[in-house]
Length: 89
Image (cartoon, rainbow, N blue to C red; front, side, top):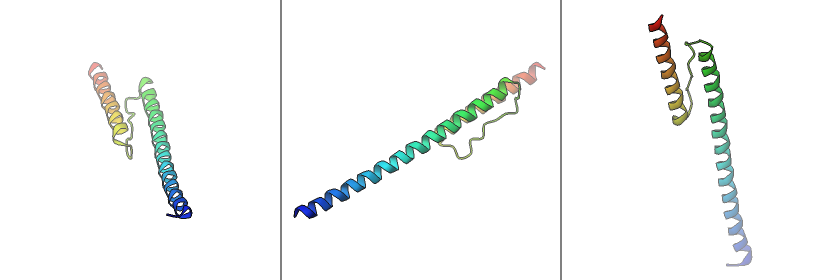
């Protein structure tokens, strides 16, 4: 293989690697944004519940499976608190 062809092959490999890394960075940035938005939502809803708003719920539409599971658990906890509050009244 000539040096020019070798350089061409190496160059293509480097470009593929760069593209792959860019895709991974974009995916990580997307996950980071999703996590930040979920944490903000958790905080807002839990703040409402602490102030007595037992109707507050987390909308997990479009969330990844892990974050949605946490949101569903928080919603279940709020429902249990709401039920107990009504029972005591």
